[in-house]
View 1 (cartoon, rainbow, N blue to C red):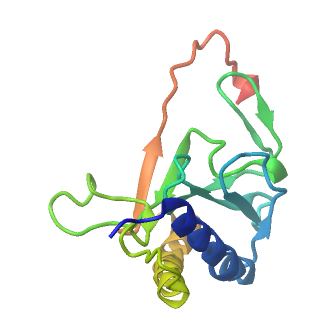
View 2: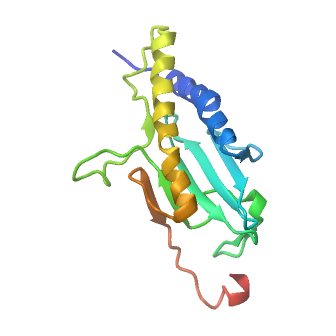
Length: 186
């Protein structure tokens, strides 16, 4: 059996739009304006009591594979300054803006779980190319349900910084010349 990645991706993008985004809206998130990118992505934020924002960004694979992941973060009310000097307003920041972020991935169990963590996908071979619409939508819906099932871990992280089994903390850690970034920039 051959797979049709662009069609499988389209089905998964539609399922995320119909099933994941409404779940985030019910949790208080609002969508930021769509970026002008060739790949499907959504950036959402919700107000925090301290004036800052909880943010989540969902992004699909740039190589048109039927898979996605999410990054989550918090942004202070003051916004943030990138190490290269760019300032990002708090209400425009995405989960990808800070160098430290948390990824929401589909984790595998076992010894190599960290290495084998992967994007949410219904798999190229779960897609049936011969117009099997119901099976394809069911496979995409199952992926969306798995993702929504991980949102409670994200909520715990936003509230207590506790990493759940599907959350991976990253630090891109760009080295910056301290003479360029002063305390006033931070």
